[in-house]
Length: 302
Image 1: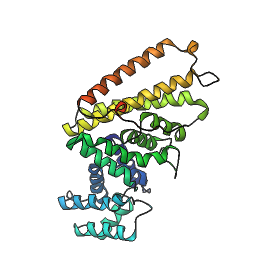
Image 2: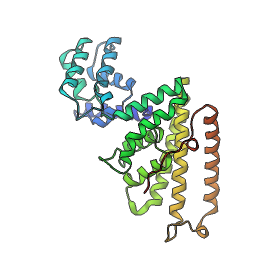
Image 3: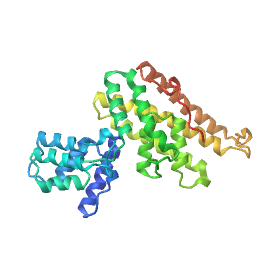
Image 4: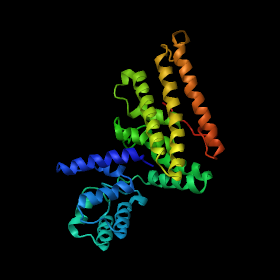
C-alpha cells in the first residue's frame, strides 16, 4: 500500500539515474506502483508504440515471480530469473528489452513476503469485507515487529524510504505506540535531541496527511476508501508523536512529566488534535473499520 506520491518520486529518481547512465537504486524499483512500473517500462524501452495488453500483463507477472514465497532482490533463484525472462519473451519482447527490464529492477522487488501479503489482504478487505482487516494487520505485524528493534536489520532507516515504511507499518498492524518505538529505536538522527526528533516526526506525519487529502480529491471511490483509512491511521500516529514529544520535553530527572513547566498552550493544542482523532475514530467505527481502541495489540517495550 505505498502511496502514489512515493511511487511517483521513486519513478522520477529512476528516470534521472537512467538518463545519467547510472545504476538504478533497487529500493526505488521496489516502491513503484504497477502503473508507474508500466510507464517506466515504456520509457526505458523507447517503443514506437505503447505496450500491448499482453506485454503489460507479462511485466507485472514477471515482477511478482518469487514475491509470494518471500524472495526478491538478492534472493531470487535461477528458476525465478528464468521464469521472468520466459514470461517476457513469450509476450513478444526481445532479448535486449528483457535484459533492460530485469537489470534495472523494473521486473523485481525486495522480497518481503508477509508485508506484500498483508497489503493485498488489506486492499481486498476494504472492498470485500472489513471484518477481514484485523487478519491483514496481523500478517503485516509479523513482518514489521522484527524490524522495530532492529532484528535482522531494519527497514526503518532515517530517510524518506524509512518514513514510507513507518507509515506502511502503521497501516499494516503496528499500533501507533509501536510505530513510534520503531522511530525511536532506528530513525533518530540525533539521540541527544529526542524532543526535537519527535516533533520532526509529528511534522512529517502532518505532511503525509496533507498529501493523502490532496490525492483523495482526484481518486475513484475505492481509492478514496483506502485513503480515508490511511489518514485515520496517520492521525493515530500523529497523536502518539505529539504525546511523546510533550512527555519528553517536560520530563524531570525521574522521567515523569513536570506539570509546573508545561506550556498550557501546547496542552490545549494537544487536546484539539485529540478531538480531531476521536471524531475520525467514530467515523471509522461507523464504517465497520476497527480502530486502535478496538484492538488489543501487545506493546513493544523500550
